[in-house]
Length: 257
Image (cartoon, rainbow, N blue to C red; front, side, top):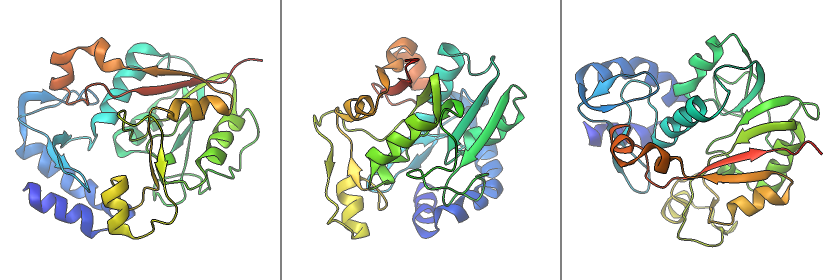
């Protein structure tokens, strides 16, 4: 089953995979039910999760029910336990909306929910992150997760995120990050898909972020807190939820002044 799942991941373009997943998701969830692991997004238990990955397959990471990965479950727990996201009225901008969140956020009456992406079939606004069609200071919260590693001019994209976030607002901008690297690596001359997969981890990534990622966000004006929330959750629950131990959440605030 794992080999077949990876075959389909690589065979179809992502917009088509999103549509196909609505059909196959209930089948995986039914046959893999159990109580060893739990998806905290919907509370369902499974004997194992699915494998996922391009350059390198990660075992037991993709939830059969929500199709969430480690980063999605970590973000959900952080939003739920450490922010007012689920309780206070706010205008939310969500880039490349993930299936694990999209319908759930859309049902929340206290959210003024706007989604955007160039390619996603479920996004409301088709837009370039480097040239957003929104006015300055438009949003209270921005979620932009695993997007910036695809963007050649990520500094311009960060500036746009800063521009459309209101003063006092906050955002979470997760990326795949190699914490063993001090400095981000990118090379625009690498355009071959196989070579990009080998070097950057995925065929459509253009860089590998290092520990300086937080400095890049701070350079455009954000106040940045690199939160290791797995430490707060603990080893036992992190394993039960299948989180990536030590993954850092980039929690960014736009100063009032």
